Image 1 (cartoon, rainbow, N blue to C red):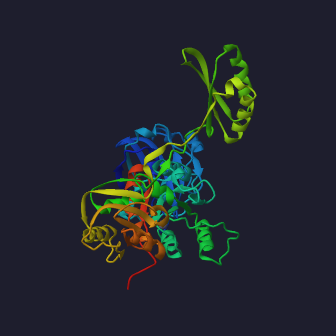
Image 2: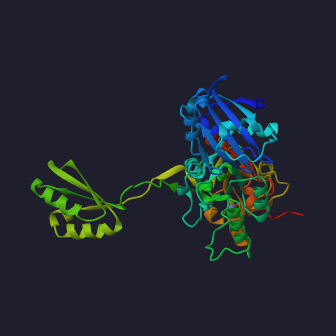
Image 3: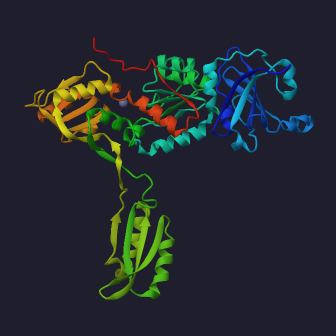
Length: 484
Ligand SMILES: [Zn+2]
């Protein structure tokens, strides 16, 4: 009795695409035949799906090899739930695949697999999701960091992986939300999320216990019990060139924008905080000076030839840490000939042009405040916003420069010269300060200025992660405040 073919498809990505993210009820037992050409079998793979975690058995052999049972079956490796440990050789050749339901008499091909169900129920749309595969959590985190480096985040923030199920952890479904409330967690669990990307960090202050008493503790418990990770990018995404603030600026109209507080390159300078430079005129001193300086921890020395006052000199340049600087100065002060002409420079990290907090946007063509309000409402899909008119301004006043900051913008916007401030929330007194300077203020509620970014994020991450995993948006996540 032959197995029944359920699906025939082709894939352009390598083998992991065959780890099918199918959630079936009841559990199903599938066999996948992967081929480099239809009818020319390259390898045979058996898959067992138990709830959401697949038991995976890979048999990286040609169909011909299967006739040699001892060789093949002994090399087959049963793998624990959700873990792929065996990959067939030559996997890049796999272009086509067929999925068969496995019938009881076909079990001879996978004798080491414990059969749990002989009936399989497949929904066609689920099969289509089979072109996506799992990503190991660690690999996914690396890719997310390539998308927007966590080093962009503010120093006070709590970003990155906040809850990690015991490794290894594979991610099939990435669930995006602005805020991780208990209602959103319930939705994430129903949708079988493996990793929740919560823009705001659900854990911020240190926790002293994990009990059922408070909602944040319960979030951690539910995440770990259900093997769901939690990752939060927060201010790293605020600062990123393709991040939340850039998305917010898109609603203003055609404009040029720059960060209000540009980020600094995180990796530079690579060594030290200061540079000390001085010249050595007598070459016989050079070796002695260099070796003495190199003995100081935290100092790197480079030398180059220079010409000053028609005299050939060797110029020494030292990068040193704050701590080493004092020792370098102490050494040089004992040698007057060096010390008199020593220059000490404080090293700054270079600014990143398109990365940073807030955005100062200059419109190509100014528009009335009334028009700008309509544009913002339309972009944020809001029927109401709150407006404070700047002193001397009306709804007809022109708006050319807008300073914006998603979320709570007071500290970022403060002191910025603009016609309009756009943010989620500001304190009463900060609004009064801005208005007194003739700056109008539009407030939209905190997360209304952030949440819409998530659909752009989903599309960008799909492309960035090469469609390897499912990415879904929360439907229950919303701002807690409503106008009634
Ligand atoms: Zn926020």
